[in-house]
Amino acid sequence: MSRTLYPEHLPWHQFHLEVGDGHELYVEESGRRGGIPAVYLHGGPGAGCEAWHRQLFDPERYHIVLFDQRGAGRSRPHAEVANNTTAHLVADMERIREALGLERWLVVGGSWGSTLALAYAEAHPERVSGLILRGIFLCRDEDIAWFYQQGANRIFPDHWQDFVAPIPEAERDDLVAAYHKRLFSDDEVTRMRAAEAWSVWEGRCATLRGSQAVIDHFADPFVALSLARIECHYFVNHAFLEPDQLLRDADRLRDIPGVIVHGRYDIVCPADQALALHRAWPRAELKLIPDAGHAASEPGILDALLAATDAFAERLEGA
Image (cartoon, rainbow, N blue to C red; front, side, top):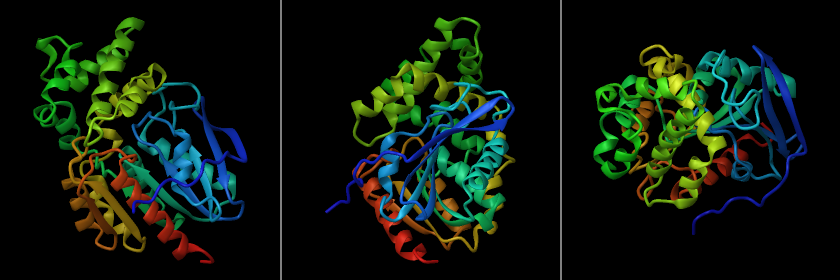
């Protein structure tokens, strides 16, 4: 029988943390005060956290930290890309950890959240008690090109037609650059049309079986604008990572226990990325979910994530 989310619960502390450069991050704490510290990293970049992300953790055992990364969700200013790089986000995590007085924490993230989790853990391995990563996204040029240029379009050719519709044929040889031009246009209609097309493409491809709830979330204008602008900003800049950086530096994870959860039929981030990470970080346990795509909400992936947070609770309690 598959595990289900823990009961809904509300944060007991919510605030905005100034991190410089004009950015203020939304941060919340829930679960048990003095419990096992855990931080959840949302995807995108630019997607923002959702209330159900708290429910991946047993609130009787975990001190749960959620935050919206620069420009995302309830962080301010919305959809802002200035002073918004991977290095900024890694530094922001340290500011949050220090502000909350936490020595170490379990780091949990999916998709872009796995990218940021790896970058953070490789920079600050002594601050990470464990890693639970879903839908591995190594953010190499080839991984970005697969989804936004050539690869996924052959799996979802009908949805691809809608994705390329805002871009003239003469500019389709570099779709990320063409979208960047429109997402940062001075014309609001152009920006919003591009944001919706970019974001809905991701939502349509995220699950093994199409999920209207997932598509509707991605189509929401508030979500779509920050997701599309910030993702595109990162991807035209190679995610602000050096070539193959996350695999190259994976030896820094050698003392960190971890679980890698990946859907067998993940079209957004194909499973070869999870296997490559596992080879570079053999201490982690690899769970390939046979009947799932990319989204954390799919039953098999959700079950594996909950099993992982439960297992880490046993491991870390009293540690």
